[in-house]
Each structure stands twice: as structure tokens, then as C-alpha cells.
Image 1: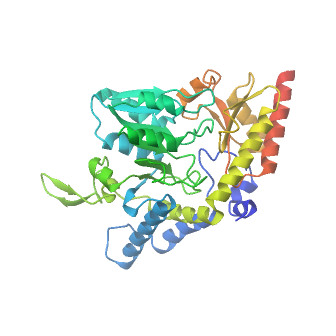
Image 2: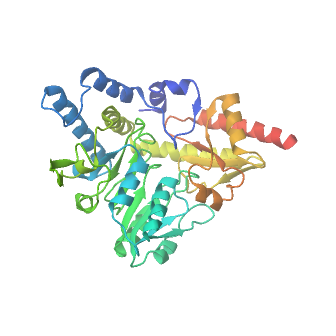
Image 3: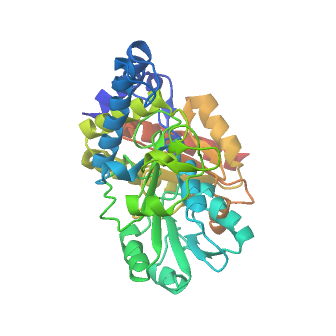
Length: 400
């Protein structure tokens, strides 16, 4: 599929220049149609009945699990459905039953969702060590080697920073964790769907992903990927219907993994949409998406970086899909609002749920940054329009 084909499937793109993929992506028609097909023709609960429609809905959900597993080179039983990445990370943080004396190692470029759950464990006596990145927001593996020790139960890092787009050396970090006998979690929220990801190749014990970003799926969907052996060691945090095989007045028996982690009625239509989104991304081709993404990311970086009175964060050689910037002396929220009101350009502004990262980049006190985040549907012309508009605003701002 060409970029124009994808744009034709997303009516929203006729109305605005949408550059907030790091938050969520607009949903293509085939994904919406798959969800509507569920509502129109088999809108029943899963795993709850023996009648034909219930069997069909259950089979459809199993098909989605199989599609997601195949997409990331995992096994069927390694996929746990969640409503987002945040829920997936909290499943791990609470499920591992970490105790006083255990240690977590993370970076200062993490989204709050991959930091707050770990900081919360300090109340139990768990140590959390934060490793600082360089001036471009990239981890040095040697710093991770120094931090990971015999007490380290988990190393957790984001693959691509949601705030500035810096790409971490996740394969190399996985080897460090493996050599030290530590578990390894990779938050792939900003890389999933943008490039080929191999669960086994990452040397990761856990990967966490939403459905509504790079995968072009609906909101309220996501997954945690980890082995059945690890799942058996973890404690489910959402117990109830669907998680048990037997219940007595004084005890219960958990059902098999991964289902014991999926308590209650799932977002069935959303997950049906997620399966359709995986099919859609595969039709485009992840190699094609990544090639396009790298090209327009560098183009946008250079467009803005070459302008007088602007600052762009990160290195053009090591960011993907996200260009984070400011105009000197201008509040990022004001700049984002002007872009929206004058040219219908949708970008995010603020701290991007990554305050430690913003402090590290020196942008916290000025209100964060403006963040343009891209996907396959974005074009060179849109990048040019944003660059031209930033130039005009910057020039006007300097002349005030």
C-alpha cells in the first residue's frame, strides 16, 4: 500500500495535518469496519456460552491473539490482552511480588507509565535506580552495566522515547540483563507498528504495547507479552469472571495462562479491531513503514533545526517518528495552539508524561516542548507545511 492508499482510508486526514501519532493514531476504515461487523453480526460476550454466536466471538478473539503473537514472533499463550501499555506495566510491577532489597533499574527517559509503577514499589522497600542518558537522550550500555547488580530483579527501558524520539540500544541492553540474571522489560509503545519487532530477538522477558499508536488500532487495546513460565510466577491483579476454574466458599483455583490475567468482559470490539489493524499494518509492510518514517523524521528535524530561533532535541541520526522542538522564549502550548488555529496542524505540547526526561533536556521550566510525531500517512508536503509555518511564527516572534 502507498501512503495515498492509507490516507484514503482515514477521512480525518482530509480535515487536518495530523502529527500526534505518539499519543494515538486515527483509525483506518477497515479497522472500524471489522469492529462494526462485530456489533452488527455477533455482538455477544466471549467464553460465556455454547450457542453459535458466543462460539464465533470467542474464536474471533483467539484469532486476534494468534495474529498479535505472529506479528511479534511470540507464542499464542504469551499474549495477554490489556487496555493499554500502562495496564500491562502495572501487571508486571504488581504481579512479580517484588520485596524489600530487590532492585529495579530504569532510565530517566521513561514515560511515567514505565516509572511511576516502579517508584510506587519503594514503599515496599524496593530500590529503584535511575540511569541518566546522554545529552541526546540515549543510554550508554556501560552505565547500565554499572547499575545492574546481584539484587537487580528487573531492567526496564523504553525502546523509543515518547518525548524526543531517541532510540535506545535495546538488543544490547537485553544481553546485559541476561548476563546478570535480571528480568528485562521493553516498553515498545513508540516502536510497535513502526518497525519489525521480534520478542525473542530482543532478549526481553516482557514487552508492552498499546494498540492505538503505531498499530493503527482502536483505543482501549494493548497487550503484555511474556512466557507462560513467567506468567505462572506472577500474581493476577484483576480477579473475577474468566480468571478461575473453580471457586468455593473459602478458596479458588486460577484458570490457565494467559486467561487468568484477563478478568471480566474484555473490550471485544476493540480487540477485533486490533486484529484488523495488525492485518492492515502487514498489508502496508513494516519495512516500508520504517523506511518512510526514518526519511520524513530526518526531513522534519532538518526543516526545523535549520531555522533561526528554534531548538530541536535529540540527534537526527538517532530519533525515529518524533521531532520535539521549541521556539526560543515561546511557550510550547502557545505555539501548538497557533499551529492548530492557523494551519490545522495537530501536535502535542507539554511534558508528554515524561517529566524527568524534560528536566534532563532542560525544557521542564519552560513548559516542555512541542512534539510532532509521524506515521506512514504523513507526507513530505505536510512536513514542509509545518516547517514553513514554524519559520513564519519564529520570525514574527523575534520581531516582536
